[in-house]
Image 1 (cartoon, rainbow, N blue to C red):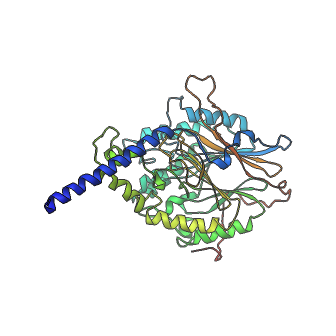
Image 2 (tube, helix red, strand yellow):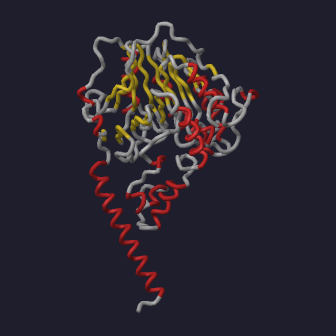
Image 3 (cartoon, rainbow, N blue to C red):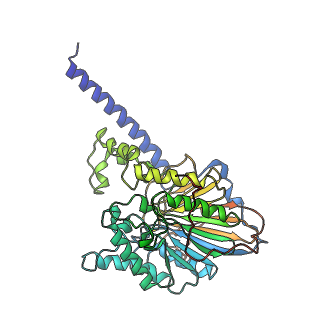
Length: 428
């Protein structure tokens, strides 16, 4: 009869064999769909649907996230495609830059050795908008706050000042690092609401209260303000923008590849291919169950997400746009529309299926088109092959998100970047 140490050894070998077999099967599945377009069966006929040609286009909005690693040589594919979009969109349009605008850690102090590189990455984005007649809105992400470190607030203030100094017509929202929400009236009957989602997961100093120019006095009041704001603007079409997604089939949503289970050290260095079966799965499991601050599983992120969804689920037809995960994703859940548009300069694994209607591991961005008849269409913009004569590629997905009567001519106007009023009606 085998001794207890031998039994333990046999058990470890058996568990390792099962894990390796599971990882191999996962790897085979991933190879079949990595970087392939996924469209849920319910939307499989998307290509046969087009906007109503009899209704005029009244506003266009580009949603671009995680541009922080764009090429600074003038040949960045996403930035070139975005500039083409800007030229076609004209004055009745806007662009929302969804955070993580400068990798790896935002804009450091002037004496920091990385300052020059950070300025170049910021400048190439600002230069793209100099002759643009539409609205430009910048949000901040975790990297812009020095990856959530305690001195991140100073990084955020430096970036906001740099953007507004070098592109005065732009908006940096919410201002001064406040949590928000703040609003911007894009067109008659069309309201943009901006939240600083990094505020809830940030370490160190965070602005709060009137002495910082913020309307909220505690971390739950912004959700109360958001509820009141949405209630008062039911007559408008509303787009909410924040850096952190509320649904995701990618890394920050707890989805990992077989490679990340078997070779976990590649997360620190891309060439560290040291196989660690079983032990290697501890890192993904930790990220799925507990998480770093930038993961949905982390207690701070989880609490912020739960409170935000508790408000949004009360208002059908809300469109929420985020970046953070480096891919394109669309979810239609509980009558809301949730976008992840975070592949402005990087791409990363995204799992197919689940609650998603569309996913693609590809550089690009989403666009929204608002029509006079009340229809709202989601469009995908992905750069073509480098050898192509045009930076545009064939559209891989589009969908009508909202339909309805024409926008009322008497739609109320909200002052640009006005802070939401306080309310006690929302969830805490």
